[in-house]
Length: 152
Image (cartoon, rainbow, N blue to C red):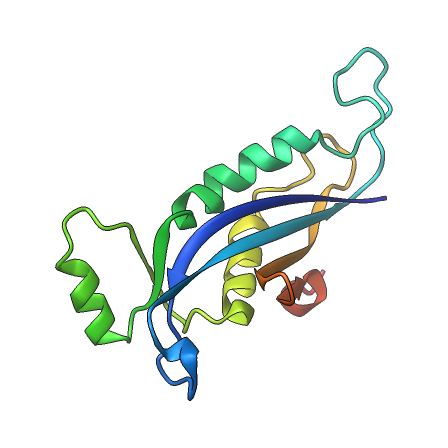
């Protein structure tokens, strides 16, 4: 069985080597879709009976481990010195330093790596993170699949 939970957040970034508008500081209304696979839980009388995982728990874990950190933050490549220095000069600015340029592809990969250990076989139902889809705009997104990152 497969289920997906969608969350949205706002964040800024720039792509320093881009040859068009994306080289400038700008922001997006991102959407992240977290897809889990596993077996349906059969536990009469339990709140998770008939589910893989409660959607509210998927949301809570995603917010705790990723979304709250990225929401209303500037996602910046550590090697983008002018922007790193500029953001450091702003008092109490919410900045997330990344080891990769914050393209939607790299952000989806980082999100998958961050969330993969969070959704473990909590209920004995073979629960696991299967895919993270990150929308940069309604028409542009990247998918990070389990097979791209995990060999088992």
